[in-house]
Length: 95
Image (tube, rainbow, N blue to C red):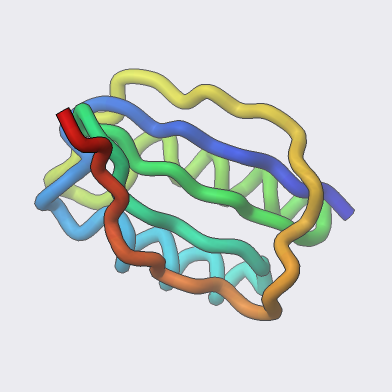
């Protein structure tokens, strides 16, 4: 079992990245969540069988058709507490 935290940067907002990732992760049997962050960043936690997590990370390197992924920062993280894969609301810092 593998659980990873992803910060995906580039042209990843306004292109359906969250819905796309939720669909891909669900099809791969993964648990976790995805949300938009500041500065063209999508944050996600994906958890499941090693091969499925690796496959999902590789899919995220491209993203949906309209996305342009510049980089993915990946770190290990504790598994999420909720079951299934959830599309969370966007989180933006106050400036």
